[in-house]
Image (cartoon, rainbow, N blue to C red; front, side):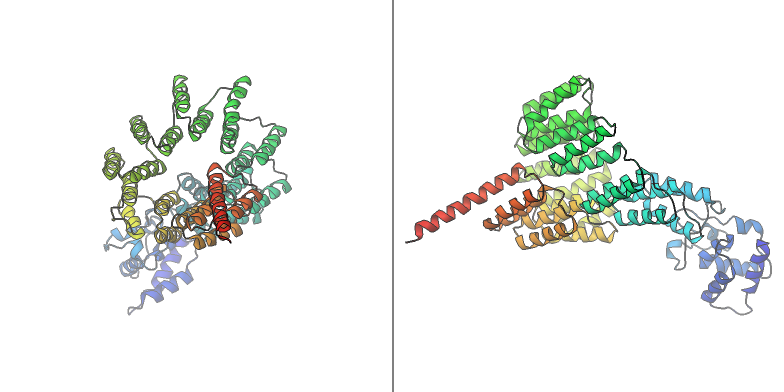
Length: 555
């Protein structure tokens, strides 16, 4: 029956005199059902024209209708058959990705869901969303598993609005979301500094009678620990215990980090004895927290001893361990040992992340060792990591002030030409590199290019922009960004947001505003870190000195 329909449509559209292809397309789309196998033909004008010209008064054989091959990249393989034409889907203005497989068969409901799940798990988010739109165009909807994986995949790449939209669509169709979907939204909202929306997720979870799992509590725990909220962290741990979830290495590592960030590093290290007393063995997470605690307070020797003990117990250091040691050795001026560790890490097969590379080259830049920066960058690229090496080359150029990538457009285009996948993390790293140099306009341009790629701004990226203005001493622009963060993320997630604003006013010599910012930080529930306390003391000393000078000059 379908073959007869195909014959009647094509014969009806073969005119005695040539007609405009647009008219033929419109009439065929009107006559054919959207789920017909002929949908493949009307996806490409050149193929339609070739089929019509060859068909004349003969119908198309069934095999030609069924086996319309399209590749997943969107290239129409039918055009390779006589009469040949080199038509590419990307150059065809009327091309729509067909609803079918490479062998020409339509995707069934099960195949659609399997393909969506496969794409989500492999990180092909755009392809999965495209397949979702095709499925909905056919009047069908994904199953619960596909919806959950779509939400997870979107959340992992920071596309919070789309993840929330998919979640709302899923619930409107009567699906009962699993706790995994709620956890994804909860993590997304907290990462973007939207605790109000995160609270609504938890309320919805409770209203539906869905029990929170360990992951839910760990997301909340990580949020409070990063915000340095000691009391809230212990409340979450107490609730975990009531629900039967005993603290694990993740929980203990966060508690150690929290004590460390609040200046109670000796109490942080004493928790190790408590862990051993409970019969728990120290794993990599806890060792990493202890090493970072010692490093932060300048006990580098103790940190190295713990590092050696860790290896003797058969626990291999990971990238977090090396990053901590390298970062703090640089922080305390021991760049030579930091470079040795940097090399040792690579010899053990671990590839350094850009943040640590930034730490090393920024310290080398302060010392004017431009040749070492260039040599370090080249050594990384020669180890066979070509695409990632391109990122390091760009960073080395920015910090080394060689001038090649002082414009953000050139920088991003260079990375694209090297085949680097521009993720949210990559944009943030490049923006941070410009921000640390005080290049505000270039930082803004990077963030604009990121938004053009469909990546949403989050709280971390706004902090990067705030840091750019603060480094340049442009306190009014910094205050504007701060107010935007305060309006969209209440309460603020990180105390570093306040610290960065304090830095902007100090560099602009507006010392009288620094104490009020410090008080607002405390009022927001954020524990001031050591850097904030030092800036407050510096500002108060200057204000006191000015007051004494004023009194001495007063008759």
